[in-house]
Structure formats: structure tokens, C-alpha cells
Image (cartoon, rainbow, N blue to C red; front, side, top):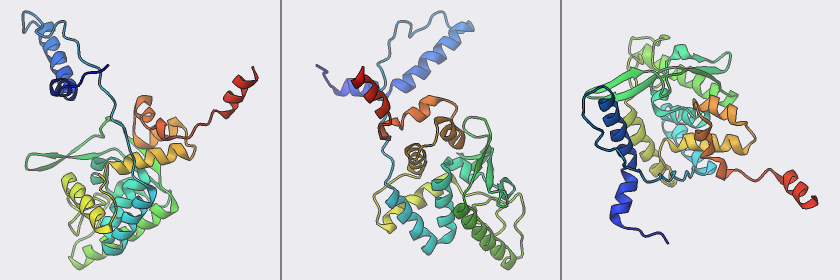
Length: 254
């Protein structure tokens, strides 16, 4: 029998930060900064993986359709997230030099992260770059978005260059959206579109789950989403239908 108490729950919620503390103290002791490791003998409780529930495809399509009609620029951004599975910071950091509309691919090698007073450009979360394909619909959405950006730039007396950010509130695309702005706008768009509340990151979950359900290999899903370990993909396996019928028959006939 498992006994629950607020104290036990608190320990589980803070286990991740406690683990970081243990490693930090061990690092300090190894370098002679402390006489002993204060956490020696401490055993952390096992962490339960958070169950992932991706949004329904019809709700994803609905919010994208709503935005493309009401605010095409934001529609293009949300569609890009949903159709590529990119991280929020990677979308913020995308520049037109990274987009090859003719070849149908984008180069993901930059991320924009919040910092005090604004944002900063960084490498991707894993520190690795990747080139991913985009389909005809995504290519068309980005082509139309580029044309709108170019038209606005002309009106304002500026130009869109290869260094311009793809998604920006400025006519010349000189600066990216703040990641928090994208998050807040997406939540508001879901409410306006009449779909259940979802996070922008849930579109990444939807992308991975959909690909696995449609037969994409684990390697393909890892490459597209920029994951370095199979464990990241394994979080989605419970959403897949059983495909081991042949194995079941072999066991029955043994």
C-alpha cells in the first residue's frame, strides 16, 4: 500500500532540483572546497515521468485555420511549429537565410531565449544543428508570409534581407519575437478559436505522436525534433497502436 502525504508529494516535486544540489556539492568536494559531502547517503525517490497528452489533430487544424484567416502572420508561425515540431526558441531564431523554399527545407541551428531586459541568441537546446524537410503546404505558407513581409518592408522604406528574422513584429525583421510573446499569443488564439486550452509546446508533442502513429521510424522522429536520446521518443510510445500481431500469433502457435 502506498501512503501519500503532502511531505512525500513535495519530495517528489523537488527531486529534480535536489539532484542538482547533490551534484553541485559533489563537484565542490572533489575540488577541495568542502571537507565532506553533506548529502552523502541521501537517496532520492524515483521520479515518475509526466504523462504526455498531445492535442487532438482537429483542434490543431482549427486554431491554425483561425489564425491564417484572422492574422496570417501568426497563422504562419503556428503552422510552422505544428508542421515542423520545432522548439519555441528555434522558431524565434529562424532567419530567412535558414529557409530554402526551392529545395523545401529549413536549417535549424539557432535559438532565441529570454534574458533580463530582452532576448539573446544561443545554440539549439542540444547544441546541435539539423536540416529538416518542409512539405508543399508549409512551403506555400512561408512563401506567402515572405511576400507579406516584403510588402510591409517596402511600405516602411526598408527591406527584408537574408539576416531578417522570419517571424518578427518589425517591418525589416531586425529583431525576433520574444518567446513569451509567442506563448501568450498562442494561448489567446486557442481561446478565440474555441479549442481546448493547449500550450505551444503541445504542438511539438502532437508532431512527434502523429509521425510515430503514421509509421515514421524512431530515428526519423529524433532527427526531425532534434532529440539526442531514444528515451525522449519513448515518452510517446503509449500512444501508438500495437503492431506486434505477428509475434502474438507465433506465441499462440508455439
